[in-house]
Image 1 (cartoon, one colour):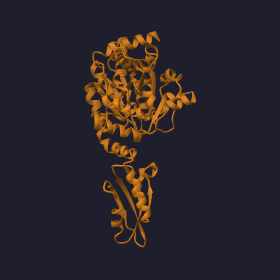
Image 2 (cartoon, rainbow, N blue to C red):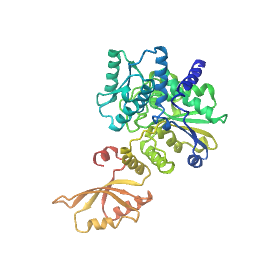
Image 3 (cartoon, rainbow, N blue to C red):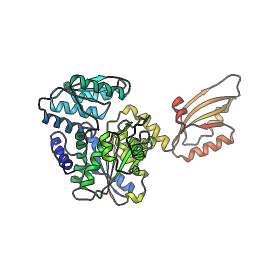
Image 4 (spheres, rainbow, N blue to C red):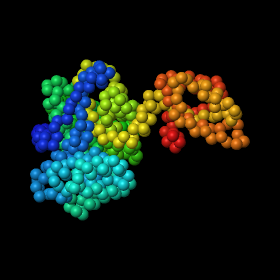
Length: 418
């Protein structure tokens, strides 16, 4: 382990040429809200707006140390932050890199990756899903004798990500680090930071966070073996991984399963909106995981403690903002969807509108009048300023003999019609 600690320090020294230590900022708003000293380790402020630059840089720099002539044969597969970190490093070192991305990758991510890599990279769009893309990248690496730069499952990547912990301890300048919270995807960040702090700050409590729709590490820890999930929810794209890396799991398998907390995506969206509106911070879903989980922890775990939340990335596609706001409103209880049974008679709509309170706003209304029927069906979305207003509305609907069904939490039904 001494070698690992030394290697992390060397990696930090290596990357100082391209990356100053990212801020570890005390956040007044969160500190007051949770009665603790909450620091944010701002990995969303790296040149590529994520921590992925660290691992890619360490991997490529060490590969070039071993073979200085290795100038044109690096490859990676990624649809997001790893691709951008890889591209940035290829441009920095003046090496040629090939990036495989799924055909379904948003154009915004392709353009950003190309901007970081410039003439040093070539982007190949292959397959509809990441597994197809990754398989093509492996074949390319074999055929072209290219060196594959993995997103998380490699010792050099883990060392690079662990430089975050090295920086945090320096930035706290002797103040105790009581608790560190960080997101988990493939496990490179979690493995590196956990290993580093276990030996340099053994009293620090570690909390890992995964999206509820992709609990790959928690499931693996529960079963005592590395598990590949059959299906995952890709909403938290920066942390939605079906299987944690092999080396990463080897470094984490001694941990209890309850060290991992799962975060529901609607609540996460409320946190993204909260940090954007109040703090002006733009966080991608994975980058907000460590902040979101604070609201789910018991006060005694937080009160008066020094806590660092790793905000892992800020590559947020603003085309997703309407969806994020929608989910945030649903979580907060301020927006609901109903299927309403509307009597087909003159004045029925007016009767319904009179049931709405002064702060109830119709956000969606679709009505289909069907001939030879006594009732028509309405799909309705309503926003309000207090969740209690919906209870008052439901009571009025029942009293007025308007049949209705609340479909807000019916994911299957609402995904088809909302």
